[in-house]
Length: 215
Image 1 (tube, rainbow, N blue to C red):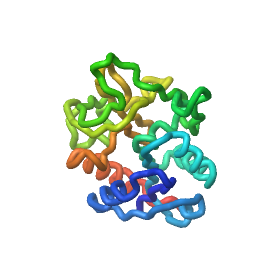
Image 2: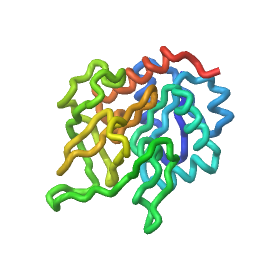
Image 3: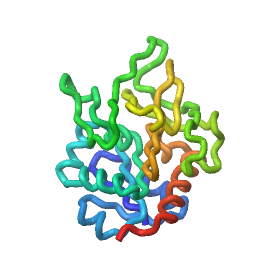
Image 4: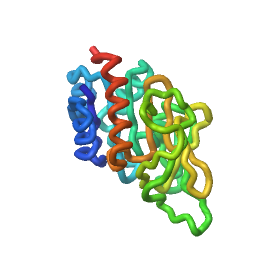
């Protein structure tokens, strides 16, 4: 069972349909109690739109602590887009003060600063290069040259460079995915990335199935 967090601003249907397409049973959860009741083996945090709204929703329901505890216990976790950005300490998004993230990993989220020929948001297909080549999330995918779909104006800058799972070049290299233990997160949208994206979800589902249910 894969539990998918509904924080009210995510592309929930696309993510759940992608997981179902790779054979993973899915349950949508909105509270810590629902996560506990699901007995899930994996937890997914998707998100689109504003990071401030995403983090505020998690805090309002108490799911912020659920996510922290889940990752701290090395349970299989997958963050997508805002679900990746939310894991860091601080983002430039959200006005002068920015947005305080969940602080799972040290680092920040910054706005793209690119030459004028590179439009922001970075939107469309782009190749990635996997830097953690032995990661189970990369199974069946080439080390470099695989294209995924991106839609974002901000990108993550981990304090620890070893956290990067994949990188992408858009007028300069940025972190396209992260991984530590059984916690994974992608800046790109696997659910919008056709067969290669389904491979990402399938690989995550395999990691979750091997971990067994959270009881």
